[in-house]
Image 1 (cartoon, rainbow, N blue to C red):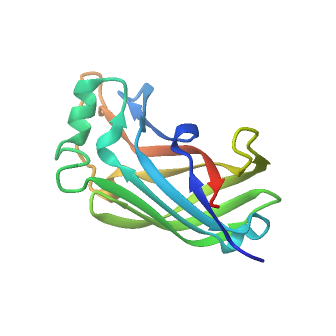
Image 2 (image 1 turned 90 degrees about the horizontal axis):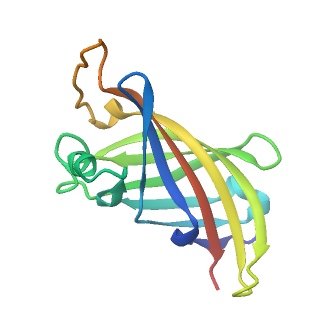
Length: 178
């Protein structure tokens, strides 16, 4: 089987996250600038090579003050660590179109192995360009403390402002490279 290069269409893709806030709700955000490439035969996805780079400065929680704080040394320290990267190292098939994608996530200068639950949604021909397009969805949960994101503060009613677990989710549309 021949591998095809699929380039992520960032206009039709999203990388988002959520974290427990004040122990009672969730704060959500996304990254507006990223790029990625999937080299795969979609019928043999376990042999795929996947690479993503996220411009961490593009964080967007719909609150400028919070975004600026997240960019600071208290959190992502974008001055010293402007990007986050993911590179797949292994892929295991779970069912027809569901996979565990294991890889190295580098965030704030720390690299850890993470497992993404990924659905390969299939492929279709784009009626505008005539090009083949593939869809992928997935998620994982990481400990922010594993990546040196330890800032927190106590809240008056007990507990802390931010939880440790960060749920990362993504919807990816990728175009077959000509």
